[in-house]
Image (cartoon, rainbow, N blue to C red):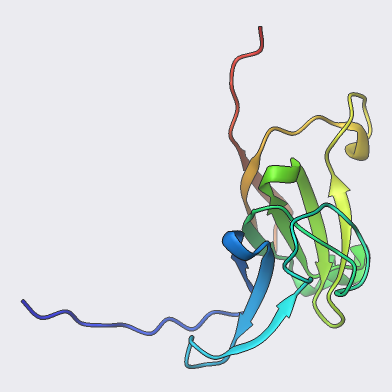
Amino acid sequence: MTMSTRRVRVRGPVADSAHHSLVERAADAETVLRRIVSGERGRSDGGPASASFAEPGGLALLPPEVAAAVGYDAVVADTANHLLRGVRLADGRVRTVTGTGSGGTALEVDLTSPCDVAGCSPAPCWAACFMSSPRP
């Protein structure tokens, strides 16, 4: 049996759940260009040296016009923290977009283990996948 390999060009970073970070790779898909955040498990916002994720799942790159309006380029499903995080790729800055709490605004909504996000352009359509269990 022969196995063929196919190279896929990835635009932007990919989530590395096991290392609690995002990774940007070179065109060869093997060489790591940079890691966004320290790789230590946590839930801090901030620059790349202080921000942290806990098992980030999927991510979606925002259309340029949306990124310019909101101030970040990608939305990351920070699965174990139950958050959606915004990441500015130019400098690796991370901020919480939604999750945690029990109220009405985006930063007060309970999320249960977001595992992926997706978007489309030019229409403003977005989706997030959540793992959940029935509430008692």
